[in-house]
Image (cartoon, rainbow, N blue to C red; front, side):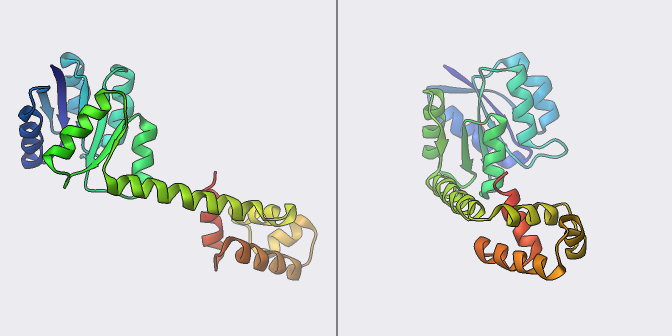
Length: 208
């Protein structure tokens, strides 16, 4: 029997997940918690094999909680169950140690299948999430290719833009004219497919 813990602040959702877990003879819900802080106190006593973790918890987030639980219970697997499906949240959760990421609208069958997959050593994601992950990697690859097209001088100018320098400050630092800085920025924008300093900075930071 695989022991499961649920960390979810919404009572209805928490009870719904508990019912889903106990539907299968393979799993048994050993405890439920409404906050990350409660989970960090309670879960070590129950030693669950798997945790279903909400991301948006009051005070400490589910991502932070998973990272701390991995220190306390290294062998416990975690699946994030959330309404959020943006790539940043997905990757923060996976970096924190989560083994899967499911949307709250997933069917009971999808939840149970994800739990089985994770306990068999796999990584569980709904089809929607998997598509977002693939799209994110494609976008990152395209951005990296664009950044790699920058000349050494253009990269130098962009790094100074990241530091918050004005065009005049960049010109003074590099000992070039203001027109030269504008010329470099124009080509940086063209290569990165952006239209402003802010967009250029965000694009560079996404590759770091």
